[in-house]
Length: 455
Image (cartoon, rainbow, N blue to C red; front, side):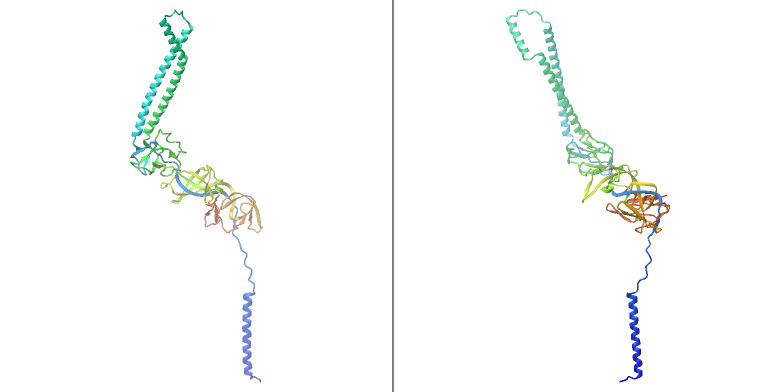
C-alpha cells in the first residue's frame, strides 16, 4: 500500500524533529559529563619581607593577687576572752592590742613562781654561809697539823672528850665537809636559776593574756568572741618567713606571722598587709624551666583590663604541685606599683619575658617549616625552600641567625602572621597591628609565647 505524498512529507518532519532532539540530548550529556574543566589558576600564598628589630620570647599564666605578709595570731595563754579590741577591716600597727583573756590564773602562777624564787635565793645564801664555815674549819685543821704543840696528860674527863672529838672527826673530815658544802651550794644555785626562769615564763604568760598584732596590717577576720575560751599556741603552726618571728616563745603574746599561707580560723584573728600585694601564679613544668628570679614581667588585672603593671619575678617554688596529673610550679611576683582599687583575690594575668634578641633579623613564625632540628622557609621568588638557623623563638615571630638577608621575601605557610597558637594547654592569640598585616616600622607584641618590636 502506497501512502499519499502529503503523508510522507509529515513523517519526514517528525523524523527530523526526533533526530534534532536526540542530538541536543547528546551534546548536553557531552558537555556535562565529558568536557574537561579549564585549568584553575595556581593558588598563591601571602609573602612578607625579612625585617630587623627586637624579638622577645615569653611565657604566660594566670594567678591571683595575694598579700605578701599575713598573720593569724593565737593566744599563748589559755583563758576566757574578756575583751575584743578590734573589728574586721580595722588597720592596726605592729604590737597593737587585739584582745584579752582573764589574767587571774596567770597572775596566780606568777605569784607562786615569785615566792619560789625568794625561797631559792635564801637557800643559796644559807649554802654560801655553810661553805664559808667549812672552809674556815679546814684552814684551822691544816694550821693545827702543821705546828703541833705539847699535849699535857689528860684527866679522865678530858680523855673522854678527846675521844668524842676524834670520833666526830673520823665521821666527817674538814675536807669532806667543804666538798659537801660546795655540792649543796651548786644545787641551790641551780634551783635558783630554774626559779628565775619560772618567774620569767609566768610573767610572759601574764603579758600574753593580751593578744598583740605581730605585723602591721588589716584585720580580715575575727574567729573568737567575748566569753569564748581561747589560748594555747601549740596549734598555731604559722611562721613568718618575710620579716622574722614577731613573738619569741611565750614572751610576746603576739603569736606569729605567716606569708600568704595562713588558713582562716587557725588563730583568734586573721590579718593581712593590704598595702603590699603580690601575684602568685602557677606555671606548667615546660614553662617553669624557662623562668627564674629577677626576670621582668607584665601583669594585667581582669578587674582593670586597660591597666598594665610592671612586676619582677621574686621566687619560683622548688617543689611542684600536681593537679589532675598536671605538674606546675608556683611563682611569686613583686609589683612595682598597685592600682588604687587592687584587692586580694583578684585574677591577674602574668607574662614573663624569657629571652630577647635586639637588632635581629626576624620572620613570622608561620613562615618557618620545622622538621626535627631543621628549619626551612619557602622563598617568594620561586627558588624553592631554603634552610635557615633560628635564635629566639616567639609565638608570633622568630629570629633568623643565618640563611636570610634583610628584605628577602618569604611565603607564609599558614596564611597569617601570628595566628592562634596553643601553648601549655591554654589557647593564646597573638595580636599584631593593622589587622594582622606585617608591620613596617611599627611596634607589634605577641601575647602568647613571644612578640617583637620593630625598629
